[in-house]
Image (cartoon, rainbow, N blue to C red; front, side):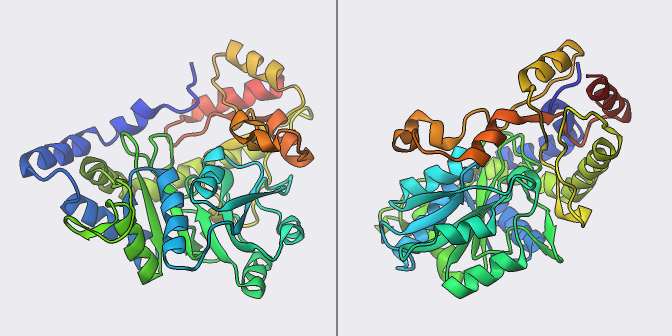
Length: 366
């Protein structure tokens, strides 16, 4: 069986280092908000090229705390509108709702499956204050047109960087392009821990301080609570394990690009539409390799018969979910087409050349 993502094999590469780091933590006697979190925050900030990184409990909390931080600082107000791609994973939208802000869904570009800037312009109102820009599937969602729009309308830009750590736009890494960014270190991400984890990056001193306060019960001094916060802190153990894996991230992303280039060059089947290849291959870190086909169930069943695992990211769009029943009758035809036709092929840095050969051969023979 060719696994869609072999997490055991990925982490086995670093087994001894992970054990050493875990043993060091056990022996230290300091298990929350210690030196391992501080070290990883410094490493992540340096990697992304920003002033601040703040560890939090997970990727959803990262986005939520950014938005709540802006509310506390008065840069957003309850009821303000935040534009967000309609085809994103629902977590991006949940963060907006949870913060008392209004998510406004924007149809994506069908080719990149990222934010369509023209469509975003058409959704602007006098209540629009921010764009939550998602680097979906590992592809950078950024352009000069987006920068111009943000400047012209004085909008905040929050990057959802859960899937694109290490991706680059004109020499700058994702996580440093907007005003702030949220990261997820869920095990299946390009940089994954062995549990849940997340972080916020920003160059904004005030926002970084507020995110840290909000994630620590609203406190920066023990038993002194300045604001109504939550408990959302990156676990000391997970921070240590992420510090082990971060130095290998660029090499793993490079392997993902090698596999993606083979798929793009060698898959030849007119029943499929392959993802668009960016002009600069270092932009994309290929968290997922997502094809589109009108016969998705048939193809998935066929590949399963060949012992090749695939996944659907994502089968149901947010506006069709019961959680957002108020949108269930709304029509987003591009988003719906994407969710009805996407299929993710195996993609991980530990796929062997032989396994890639087998995937390509099977897809071409379909």
